Length: 381
Image: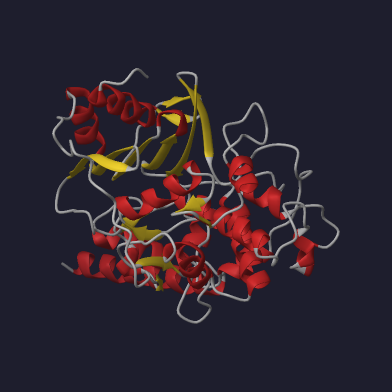
């Protein structure tokens, strides 16, 4: 018994020392990560984590533009392959939108059409859309405007806002999702995100090659906020969420309640129907109900690969699947808004996990969700 008591004292002492050391050496964000993830019974990021963070509200407007239901709404059945994939990866929402009408819609567990879940990196597409809006409204000159015009920390570098959007920034950032000491983990859990980003250095020639870095989008969000003098959730609400007729308010995670800096690289909590609005906006060349919300030239640029050998445009993932131009918003756990303009088709999927197998830089399940939609609609892929 004495041994156990002594051991417990040693363990408590070690934990206390580690906690104190984390604050001294500015690693206290790890404690928040442990509290948010492991103390909630998870082992990694999870889709309904928003209650554990500070959030700013993305307000819907007074007019809701509800999705029409196709005359054959939910008259088709999911394929066996789709059911197997959904079960394997924990799909909680799967939508097929054909000719701007919801043709098929399925939810699982306790989730429904209004349930909020984390967009994760689909937010990068939205942040890049805000760049397009800021250019359209004159807050930012063009894709070639230097970041140094907004932040003196980047004077002497040639990184542009377009480089940030297209993942060609040259920033000294390591995109790691497993190490608690990584800058990606710090960005997600730290309480001063701006400090983390502004300590980044440009170590590679910008504009030359694709390198997926969440820090690029975060810096882009900070540039947009500085240029417009509006916090991102407010600018997003005014520019898109309200004009698109979103059905529900959404939430955008912040670093803390003092700095109130939105995580531009991730973490917008909304639902499948409202996320899908961005797919339609881009499919329709930036128009919504006859109003040009985004310049059509920017839309075309954003949904075309900047580098011919890489599957990324400006905030959007690009694929030429089955000979058809396809672009998508993507999140780390298999959050997808997939658009195939040639067939006026969109597929939306939200869920807990995605495949670890990849095909041409895309998770294998990404293509399964497309293939099964074509099968269910009896369309030629």
